[in-house]
Image (tube, rainbow, N blue to C red):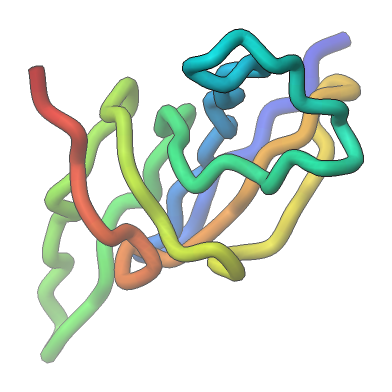
Length: 97
């Protein structure tokens, strides 16, 4: 059975996008030497933050490819896969194109 999580407030659920496992010169990088990627795809978004009784929608949406800080969010497991739940403020930018 698939686990469903609905983020609250201005939180999003992100699945990391893995970096290349080779350098430009063709050298294979072992898992122990790789840094965790700071790029991901948004899987789910919350309704938005509340200010003065009004809900302000997020600037990002499900499916957006984003960049985030190295230590952003909290890691969670959904259906055996690693994801991150973070606030919209932790998102540095949306990758377009």
